[in-house]
Image 1 (cartoon, rainbow, N blue to C red):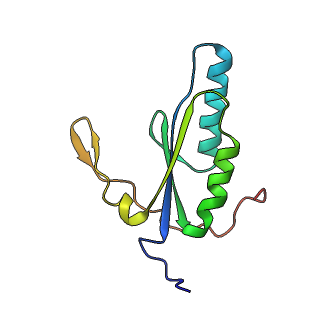
Image 2: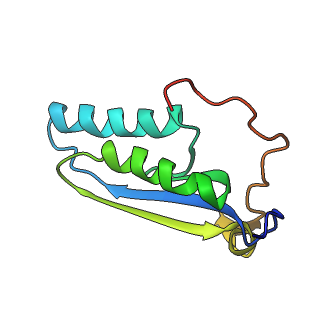
Length: 116
């Protein structure tokens, strides 16, 4: 089995959502979901788009299941995954200026949360 980590085995996960925020209860639910994503280490790309570098492909499924368990009842949530190589090809425009995508974290996560 191939264990070398390369740009095709290192993964990213992106969560895009459109949640109702008409009343105070809906806003609380949407905020709670955003807070969950941030607690899990996702970075905000846009207000309703969050991404996280996962590392090896094997970690992807458990993170996917964790996010899936926190999806609110109402609204629409899309989860997409892509390789680090694919992420490197993303073009980000901000105020009509091209910006480089986020780099991989400088350090690897050695100890994970005890909840996992």
